[in-house]
Length: 162
Image (cartoon, rainbow, N blue to C red; front, side, top):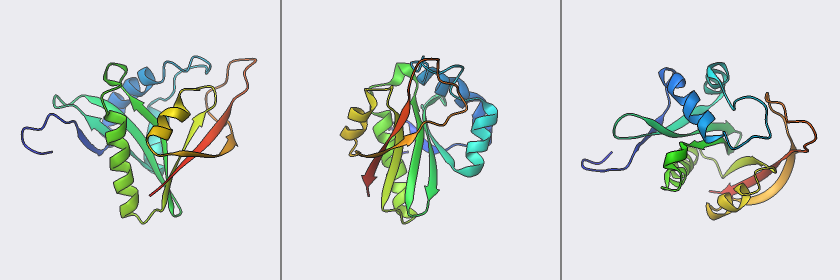
C-alpha cells in the first residue's frame, strides 16, 4: 500500500484470519433472512480456504472489513460470498476487491470470472451488472443452510470476460 494512502490493504487471507472473518461475513449476509442459520462458520471457511483462496480488505487499523472467496475452475475464475461489513458498504470496497480478483485471475490465465447470486436477492444482479457481469444461466440452489419453508430459490450465474 502506498505511503500515506487511506485505502484498505487487499491481501490473501490466512488461516489466522478465520475467527475475525466469520462475524464480518455473517453480519454482511444477515439480510438473507430467507435462510436458516448463519452464512458461515470457522469449519466452512477453513474448508473453503483449502479449496480456493479468500481475499480480504483490511482497514488501516487492522480490521477485516470485506472479503471474497476465489477458486480457479479450469480457465475461469469463480467468486463467491462477497461480503462487506455493513457500516462499510457503499464505499467502493466491493469494486476494489473485484479488481484485485480480476488481476489475480488474469495472472492465472483465466478468460472470465463467474459468480452466482441467489434469485431471492433481487438487488444483486443489477449491482453485478454495474461491475461488468452479465447473466449467463441458472443453477440449482445448493447450500449447507436450509431455505425457509415455502420459498423457491435458484442461483443466477453471472459472467465477466477478462
